[in-house]
Figure (tube, rainbow, N blue to C red):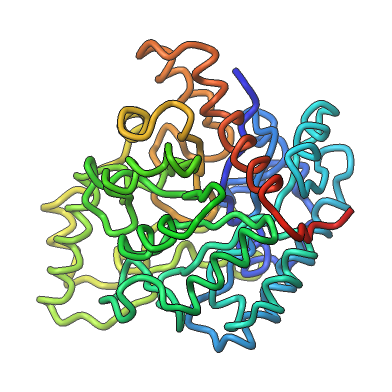
Length: 388
C-alpha cells in the first residue's frame, strides 16, 4: 500500500485539552486518542496535516494566541520524536521526509477566525509553516459563511475574496471544508491555484451541510483541487445522519437541557485513559428520560464500505486526480467501527482494491494528488512565506 498523506488530524487539540499540551508518551498506544506513533506506522501514514484548531466562538484575538500555542505544540511534538516525525513546508519536504522513513508533519489552520481579520496574521502564520487555512469552522467569520448557521454574507464578502487571493499569493492552500456551498463557489470563482477540502464527504450520498455537492465537485478538475474524503460517521452514513437528526428532535421534544456534545471527556485524576467513555454527552445514562428512546432506536454504525462509497462517488464526479484522504481522527467520536483509529487506513484501501482500483489509482488517492495540489500552489505563489 502507498504511504498515506492525510489532510486533517486533530491530535494537537486533544493533547492541549486532555494533557496540558504535553507531548510525552506518543511512542506508545494512547487510547482513547485515535493517534499515536505506533498506530500511525501501522496505518501506513507518511504525511499528516496536523490541525491547529481552536474553537470558533473564541474572541478572534484570543483565537490567534491559542492558534500560536497549537503551532508551538506541533513543533514540540516533532522535536520530541525526531526519528519518527519531520516538519514539512513544501511538497519536496514531504517527499524527503517520506523517503527518510519519517512522517512529514504539515500544519493546517482550521478556521478563518484564527486570522482575526488580518492579512498580517495570515502572513505570519504562513511564515510559521501553515500550509492551509480553512476559511471557516462552524461559525461565520466577518467575511465568509460557514456551512452550519443560516448564511449572512451569501458566500464571501469583498474582504473574503481578498483573503483567498492573498492565501494563493503566499502559497497557502484554501481549504473549503466547513464552508457553505455559496462560499465554495465564490472561492472557486476567484481561485487560480488548487483549493482543497481537507476533511469532507459528498452530499449526494449523505445530505449533511458539511458535505460537498456534485456541482462543486464538477469544478475541481478545472481548478486542480482535491477533496480529501473524511471518515466522520455523520458525514458518510445516511443512516447515522438521519438517526442523529431524530435523536436531536426527540431531545428537544422532551425539553432536556442543552448539553456539550464534544467527545469524550478528559480522564479524571487517576483514571486510566482507556476508561473514558467515547460517546456524546447527550447519550449518557445521566439523562434517564432519554433512555427509552435510545433503547427503541439503536444507533447505527458507519462502515468502511460507506467511506469507500464516498471516495468512489467523488472519483466519478471529480475524477481520479482530485480525490484524497482526510480522516479527521481525534476530531470526532463518530468513526466507522472498522476505521477506529489511524491504524485503519489499510482496510479502506483493501476495500477499494476489492472494487477494482489499481495500484496506480490507489497511489493517487493516497498521496500523489495532494502532493500535486501542494506543488501547484507553491509554483503559483508570488511571495512564498514558508520557512527555508
